[in-house]
Image (cartoon, rainbow, N blue to C red; front, side, top):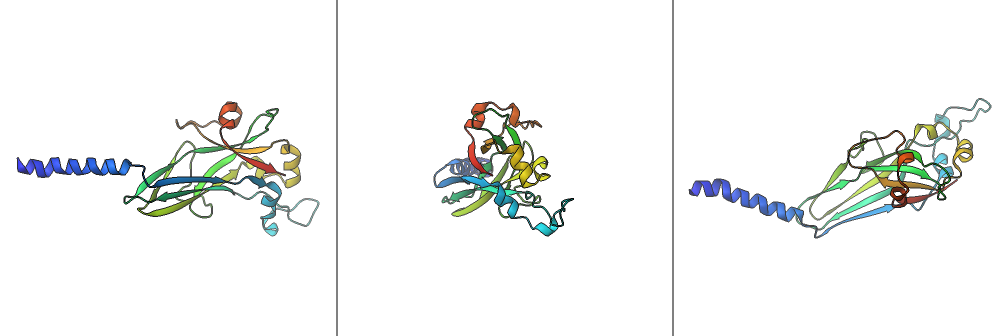
Length: 205
């Protein structure tokens, strides 16, 4: 009987106690910080011109959108004596006209990274999947949030983008449905309420 108690019951009690302690939210905080606005022109100016394709009518390379643009960061602080794991939501991004005269457009994909954006990042987020980050006891983690512009935007120069999309006011970041579904025209099929509740970042052309 003692063997049963020490071999099964006590370990189970320890597991239950640790599970309870691990579920306590005390000493754990998550702070989401997004940019107030994005200057599209400044995003173009960050590109090294000699590495880009040249215009047919010019010997000077044309600026183009970068592969990713940082739009915010998540600061996670754990003052607890046990490590914690925090789920990073699966996010989407849309271009939105505040007057709703234009159909919302897919802006691109949201990516997570602990440093500069890279497809090989530990927090590279695929469609329909959530990611999580472990925060050690009495420590902090910072996860950066990037938007990877859709291909349709990357193949246009600044003047073309202004002409085509200047009537869009915001980049709206929203939480995707958690059922793993992905639609090609996700933004165009969303209810206004979902986008109204999202994080709005002003677009400056």
